[in-house]
Image 1 (cartoon, rainbow, N blue to C red):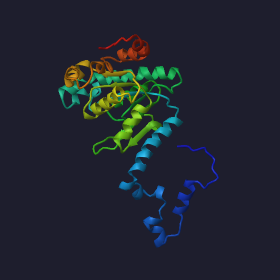
Image 2 (tube, rainbow, N blue to C red):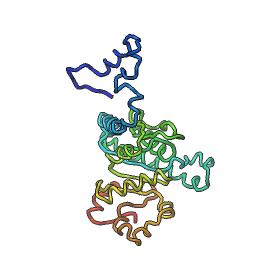
Image 3 (cartoon, one colour):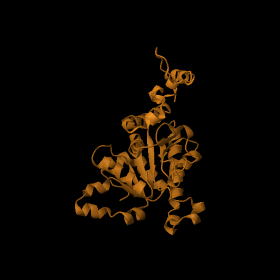
Image 4 (cartoon, rainbow, N blue to C red):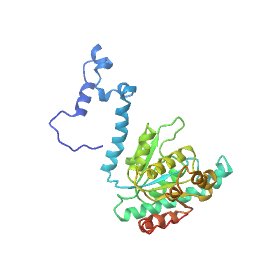
Length: 280
């Protein structure tokens, strides 16, 4: 991360290196003597949680600004959705059957990235969770188009390294789910959700809630796989029960192919103004 600002004060990097060369004494070996910002044990204390939250908000924000990422296309989806070439290794037949969504995610990301590059590559940059499955497909499609893509990884007990298609300078790692989800949505121009599990559902409903409550601007919100989503969630039952309004069902659209999604995103402004509801 570059810092081109001029300051008359001594640079923090300079002091950090200077401390490394300090005489070896009981005083300099004491944890109390370590510079606070260079003290890993201190930074991990419970009392420093607000600082760590702020750092996780700031670092990706600053680096994406420096990389001129103006807006993003969000791709949520399951880590267990297999590449069709390896679908025989899927743990269930259903996952194997869902493998075509890997292909649709890959095609969608490739098409969106091509369109992004036509206008300079700063708008509509694909962002995924950086892992396997649908996330890999999204980053892979952007890579195949010759463009950039973002990966927002998170440390989990069983978690992988970022997939190999994420642009290295835009591969971020998080400790806090909440801050990670903020970065997914802070630049979102459109949100796509592919079949997935608890994590995907969490991301889906948090984003829908923000739009429903007016905490976030309405953007194209596309659920890939009508059959999947209508099977696992009884959307109409929520409206019939009155726990959501009938109008809330118009906050999202169902699509089954990458081209359907592209078409809705391309015509979103005009169809919204006319009150049309494509995809329902």
